[in-house]
Length: 186
Image 1: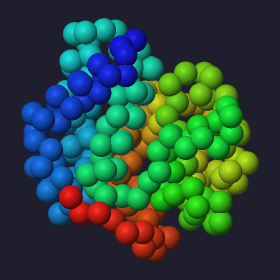
Image 2: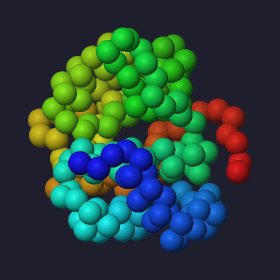
Image 3: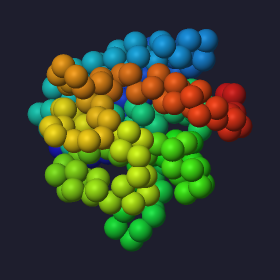
Image 4: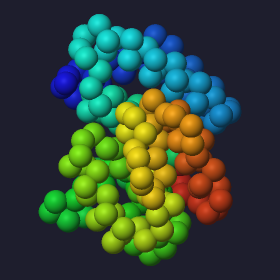
């Protein structure tokens, strides 16, 4: 397993090969292109990782986390990240924000990055905050079996959404709930 900072360097190295401004301009003009850029960046990172380490699920999940944070930022999608709600529960990402989750859970998504079995075991705690199972989205390296939540994976099989679809799905969700959050344009 590589350290988080090393994974971050690998992700940003791949981003710089394309150009951060180019990615942002293309996705701003067409959110659907986020899928293509996520795939390109992920493939480049996985290729680099295969030379530097064995591709364990924790490393791949951390890669997803770094890339998701980057994409949310350049797409100016409203989100809150790394929110501690209990002493032992940290929410990775909330769309659009914690206030929406508390007031109207149907108008919020919790996104959790599943790096290991411990992370998977805490998913039941998420239901206390988000009673709508469809609004709990999990991200993992490989598909999770027998889960009632929406699961995105880097290496999907049939029936499981691909991680590269997540930004499009977040944008669609925000349109469906008619989110009017203020978005900064970079």
